[in-house]
Image 1 (cartoon, rainbow, N blue to C red):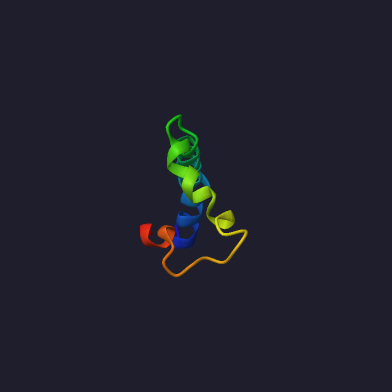
Image 2 (image 1 turned 90 degrees about the horizontal axis):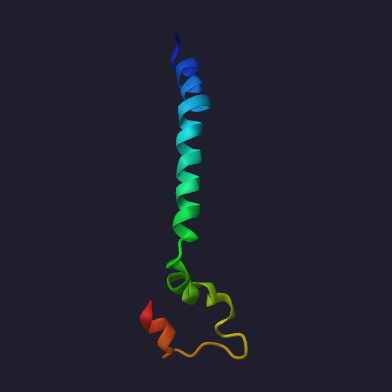
Length: 64
C-alpha cells in the first residue's frame, strides 16, 4: 500500500475520532462549572476602554 493511501485511511478513521474527542474535551473544559471566573476578565478585553483610550500607565496593561 502506498504511503498516501495509508495516511488517508488513517486520517479518515482514527484521526477523525481523535480530533473529535479533543474538540469535545476542549468544550467540556471551557464550560466546566468553575471556568466562569477564569474567563470573565479576558471576555471583557474588547470593551475595557470603550469610553476613552487606554493610558500608558493603565493597571490592566501591567497585569499582562
